[in-house]
Structure formats: structure tokens, C-alpha cells
Picture 1 (cartoon, rainbow, N blue to C red):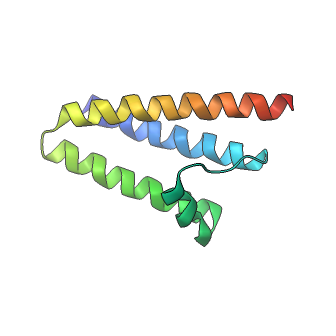
Picture 2: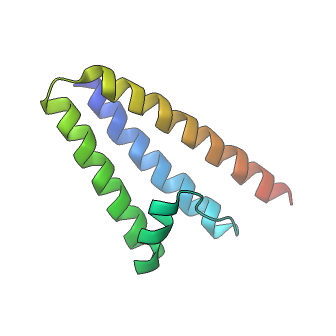
Picture 3: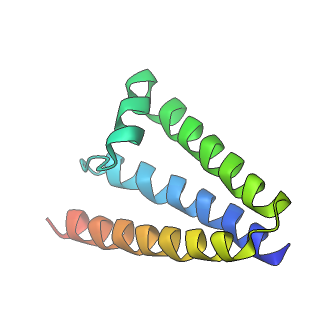
Length: 92
């Protein structure tokens, strides 16, 4: 269950860092999320996070903890990328 709790925290961190990137003038690079953001920035990001949580829940309930761990590594990298973009945009 810890791996799923971390997954949830990473989703929240990704949401927050993506909102900050956009508020600083950056753009969403994921074309699927970008398409969802056509409904509104917050609405699109929330929909993307709900989809991600559904996939994470499916992995949890099917016992695929390795898949959850891999998703956690990927989202940690995305958050690190977002933080680097935030830093660059704040220095610009």
C-alpha cells in the first residue's frame, strides 16, 4: 500500500508543478494532457490525474506492484523535469 500512497503523492506533486509551469508561461508537453486541457487547464489536468489514478488503482488491485514502482519512477522524473523548468522560467 505504501507504493500506491507514494503514487498518489506523486500525482499531486505533478499536478502542482504543472500548474506552476503553466502559470509562469510554460506549456504542457504531453499531447494527451494538452488535448484534455482544451476543456480548461485545471479541468484537463484533473482529468489526466484521475486517469492516472485509475491505472494506478488497477495495478494495485491486480497485484502489479512492479508496475506501480515503475510509474513512480517515471512520475518522479517528470516532477524533477517540471522543477527544472520552473527554475529556468523563474530565472528568465
